[in-house]
Amino acid sequence: MILSPIIDKKANTPIYMQLYGYIKKEIIDGSLHANEKIPSIREASSTLNLSKTTIENAYNQLVIEGYVENIPKKGYFVSKLSNYKVSSNKKITDDNFSQKLTFQNIYVNNGVDYHSFDTVIWKRIYNKVINDENSLIHNSGDFQGELLLRKEISGFINRTRGAKTISEQIIVGAGVQYLIGILISLIKKDYSIAAVEDPGFKKAEYIFEDYNFKLAHIPVYNSGLSIDTLRSSSSKLVYVSPSHQYPLGSVMPINKRLELLDWAFKNNGLIIEDDYDSIIRYENMPVPCLQGLDKNDCVIYLGSFSKILLPSIRISYMVLPRKLLTKYSSLKNRYTQSASKIDQLVLSNFIKDGYLDRHLRKIRRIYKKKNQLITKIIEEKANNLFKIVNADSGLHLVLETISNKSINEINDCAVNNNISLNIISKKGNNLLLSLNYSGISDEKIPEFIESLIKIF
Image (tube, rainbow, N blue to C red; front, top):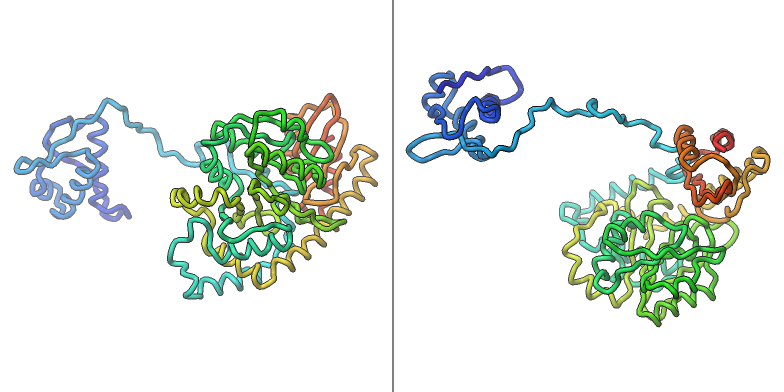
């Protein structure tokens, strides 16, 4: 047989790769048949006027990938391929897809306030970390999270949330969903049903569903989830947000907290406490976490820096009860740390040097002003279209309204206006919705409310 590739010596692609590509295509297309001998290196070099090294490199790549077989003292032969048809479609690019990337995915009210985060301080600490030989940034990080950060997180939540933790109990990861996945690997032999708040945090539900947990939906009222319904369920595991329920914003009173802890203790149960947005309150002090009340090692505590700092800093944490630490220690090497080591070290210094406390004071002022401005404009401009149900904490409002539009119509209209809405429930024409406001600038709020009014 004779090889007749078209070689472009001015091309960026190396010559041996051009030859390799030509022979590979001939084999795939069936022009070269199984067990057919191809020219020797010497013969191909002479015929094609290419160096032996170039021919040998091309042949070696074909041998490595299995298209050609090198039989000692006999030569190179085309391998027999299976009947699987190798696609010869044109190269796939973004232009092949009908769905283009658009800025409609960036909602005006999502994210955090543009002026809330001091990037100058973060850059300064970042430079300090990457220039510090003791930071060991050239090595991979701790599976559990950097010890410096775990110590700072422990001190922070003990001081601000009334928690009772030590650094050994803390696991760091890029997002609460990732951490729930680790938790499930520790408890799935003993628990198969997860009780969740209704309405509640859907992304937590998805993780339980992905691990084949059955879900028991427990209704939420003004004082938190129904303990009686929880008792009547078959679940011994419950996911709650007692200090700032998502999405309704309710706070679980002390009596119900004690009832919940008693339920867990008597049923050998576990409580997963999601402390979502609970540290941001406008009228009163933040409500202490459930974990700090726990005397029987029943509470797993979840927290995150995504909302109070930046969503792009993907650092969350989980506090395990001591009884799960031994099991975690035997399994933790199975999980690669998902949060950047450098970001963890920067954040640990950010907390240690007092910047986080200053930042929290700053964002409480920013979001309180934003909250009050939105509330004022809704009351003045919406003509009683909305009733504000909850607005005293966190970074979203809970609104009631009446609409004869379907949920899909409302969502489509919101997307077209670049507004992120969470429809909590719709019963007849009565609608309950959660409206995030953390990312919208003060100047845009009047226009934002006008768009919201048009939707409904």
